[in-house]
Length: 460
Image 1 (cartoon, one colour):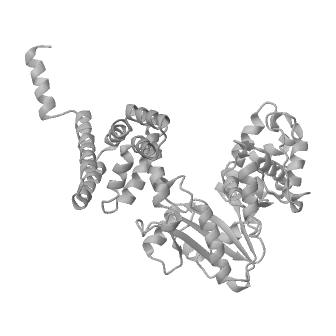
Image 2 (cartoon, helix red, strand yellow; image 1 turned 120 degrees about the vertical axis):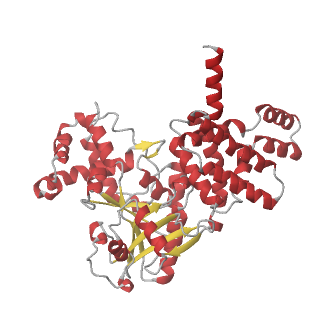
Image 3 (tube, one colour; image 1 turned 90 degrees about the vertical axis):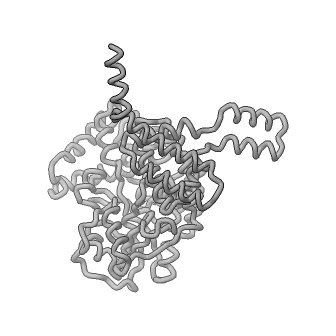
């Protein structure tokens, strides 16, 4: 390349920088503002710098956000040498001062940066959105886990129970919040305003947790049907034209939908707190309600069933079991009584087996089961063709579960699950699982059963 061509290219880069260079400069500007924020001592000027740093971050294109996160990882992590020296000093003389020095050296500068960014107006919302971006990119950028860990650590404190506010949602709630319920609902989609209004009638309840820093953003919400007896199908609860029952005659509260609203708060536990407080609210308002149960999906059951029928040594070798299961491939099989009748016993038995026997890290594979069992619920009943929506058929062949919260037993059930990974289930569910084990050949789909101590009421 001639000197003339080189200088012409250099001049072009300076006057008209390439897109990559422009994006890097934008990311660098945001990072420099973050460094200035960390060095600032004044509260007022710090809040202004936090605002400017977040504004610079929000102006970044997608590639600039990736560059910004890379800088956060590599430039705001602890100094390895300093951590090692502090650890050696504490090991040689484990004094309180040296422990504090070790803690200070091990804490990433990112955590203090995030605390200071939180001083900006709407800083908490911005950081929740930032973590959402980080979580979306973890598969391709595994080193971003450092950012995720710092934000999760801070959010665990910022969003603890002491800051959360439980509110009942009704038709008089702000339209902004009601619209967000329609948007966020993840279990049973809300089909517009008329559907939402029916879910907020006198025989229904909806509660949500809010945080002072996100006053119009529900963190999580739960929908409740007040019924006579335990519901075994969700469509009647979702029927917009269903007559409104008198809430005072209800003896059962059915939790039929729980939705986490903020992706950036994934892993921050709200659900167990929400259920327990809602139970207290309902007991105070409606003392005639004596049973509290869910009507829950099995979101991974159909996928497990499809995998199991194709695995050597599993259901693929159980001819008598596999033959009726093949009818699940028939369109609208559940609308044909003769097919549904053939499938019911096999599918319910395998669903019980799936919940009781199919494990990950010695806990149920099903995430919904882990949640409710970990909260102290009892696996009470399986319901056939309880959700015949397209999603319900695709995810769980229409099967739904009642997890019941026996208030006197919740703590003991929780301890049994947490300490021994023992599933507390009714005799009927255990009977179904035993029947499934007789159908299955020995193989990878039938791991050794781990027996544990059970309460007398759970014994078959």
